[in-house]
Image (tube, rainbow, N blue to C red):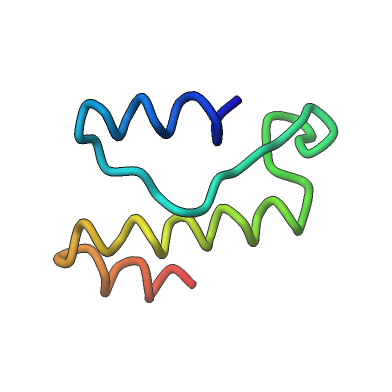
Length: 65
């Protein structure tokens, strides 16, 4: 649904969308924290893409890795 309906809708309203989508299920979490390494890596990819919109935050993101 995200790829086929929401992205075109956001595009119509001229919103910026990131190329990477993150999908997770309840199995990817334990005690309200991310327990899946694959999901954690995917989240880091998205944070890196998002940092392109906030150049002043790039050093903080790089330091967090």
